[in-house]
Length: 377
Image (cartoon, rainbow, N blue to C red):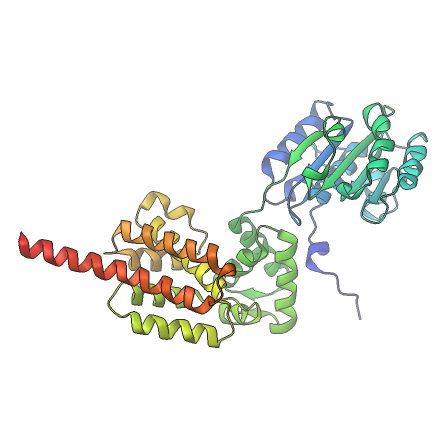
């Protein structure tokens, strides 16, 4: 039986053009290669799973590629590219600073820098989780990082830029990687699913993307988990069940009850949600997001800001008809405040129920005021 390879490794980009969601950084790196103005040291920083180490490896491969494409991409065919792809390159060194963070480890690396590359133009050193280095290790690294040999290039990667000492930052070109948007993640997952022969609903893709919180690697891990549990047919219902995500229909129902005089049913629905095992803070945070989406749905120009499928966007547009804008703003404010105070509350359930009563009370007060004004008019 063939060894299983997780999707995050199997579909890891091996050219700049296949990197997801980091277009500006990719364009800058390719232009640096094109103009032969590659810095001696780079610092790639940003959240986990957004492509820092992947871009570092592609850059390292491109620097020693002997047959770059017209788009200044590594060819993946020359001996240098092939040895790199087979993890057999003598000119690219990867160091995990999380487990090699002592001053002795850095001194050993500095000694290696003195040796010229073998059959290539550059020696490239990729140091992952560089913020884990000790202060002594950073200090031992400073001089080499500032004045390395002409053939040495350093690519540092970190999720915690604020822990890097200023003297290191000043010696590097700093690239801030952003969280990958839900749209980009969903699009890439759709591609992976097609390659793997998996049928997956669009809404399921959106749920995975939202759960991943901007990290493509996390999204691919979730995808693998769902394939393992559900096979090659992944539905929206299956996805929310396995990921313990509250169905968006609950929020549509709750809004319908709150913006009517049916607060009793709203409280019963909240009880039902708690009975299903969902956390009250998770619910109230989702309700605040739901109100935000309704607010965006009131104006055609802001509908695109919603990270939802077209079918769900239409449901938002339909529900928001007839709901006063200021009521939505107030409801969003109340839900957000409840979310903020949730952890400090001794009676967490009661705090959410009070919030729901206040939202409904605002609606009823607004309704009675409108009726009174129309009678007086």
